[in-house]
Image (tube, rainbow, N blue to C red; front, side, top):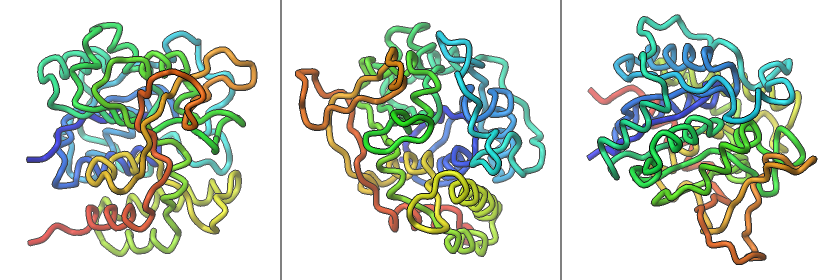
Amino acid sequence: MPRKLILDCDTGTDDAIAMMLAALHPALELLAVTTVNGNVEVARCTDNSLRTLDWIGRGDIPVYEGLARPIIRGDFPVPRAVNRNPGVHMETLPLPPARQAKQPLSAPEFLARAFREAPGEIVLVAVGPLSNLAAAMALDPDFPRHTAELIIMGGAVEKSNVTPSAEFNIWADPEGAAVVLAGDYPKITLVPLDATHQALVSLAQCEELRALGTNAGKAAADLVAFRIAGYEANQPTGTPRTAPVHDALCIAALVDPSVITTKFVNVVVETRGEFTIGRTVVDHEKRTKRAPNCHVAFGADREAFFALLKATFAPSAP
């Protein structure tokens, strides 16, 4: 039986690839998408999500729009990554306008209701700032216990991207992230930059995806190629003509847990440091007495990750 999941995202190039993987893989049943302020403003995240689902023939999956700002802060203290030229995200994905519209219910309200009505049955995959999840916890204190598992793309141990200390998703709403990581979830898996940068996709592999001839393959090829140009210009990976596809690795790990290697450790979020705001403090050497709360991915299998992408985006068997 396929695993049921809800994807919370800020679409976003890598979010779109994660969404296509979740919507098309036969081992998964994507019940809904919720959007949050992040890579682009939340209204654009919603539009990009609707476009992505429509493009791959999954316009039946509902999209719920969420918070337009962090739970405490007015917004981010510096411009979004999309404003870099070239960047790794774009305000509007290069896909046709969607024929369907967003749902009337807000994302936090939907999340609280969906998990309350099916306790323990649905995995929540969060690949953007964690504002919607923190809001859902405020609406229903039992929300964490109703999830089957929480998988988060976010955080950094040795790597970072938005500041010398922090990864964007956590930094964009550090108070929200702190609330979520302190929540009573049955299981939290954290997939930080340290793992996603071990699952790079190359420009040559983009051509393999394009050659599949499917809408998903073509879109993934275009989006990863765009990301590669942005990484080459602003933050080279160390492997020429490659880029990480952070969010999709979380979906791959849900399908095949062996795609990542994890360690059960304590993680807290810095919310006050002048130079370290948004840092995920990962106690992987057990320097404190804080109990472990997250299965943190320290490694990833690059070949297995791409093979899963390629197989999922290939034409369906007759």
